[in-house]
Image (cartoon, rainbow, N blue to C red; front, side, top):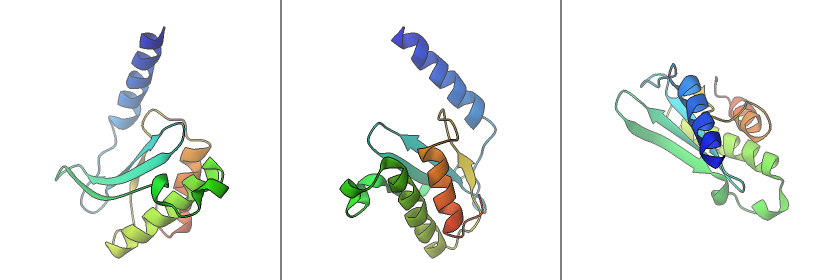
Length: 117
């Protein structure tokens, strides 16, 4: 049973991510969501290089926030780092995760930070 769920998740990830490529001018924001934390990294697929990353474990006072609030904070902090690197436009790769809840909050945090998603 668990193997079928994993296969379905990998099939969904391949379907979603197969058409998304990050370039130097428009890198890809890859999102990973675990039960406790959310992670995001900005990738230039042409150079095969991670440009910027940020995750919920680096947030100060995160014990007093909900996971959705943490995800929005991750998006805002990632947007600050992207602006420092002069990146304003990105492609959003949600992987195998549905665009709702924490994944959506992270994307909204990026938009509030001034990044075009």
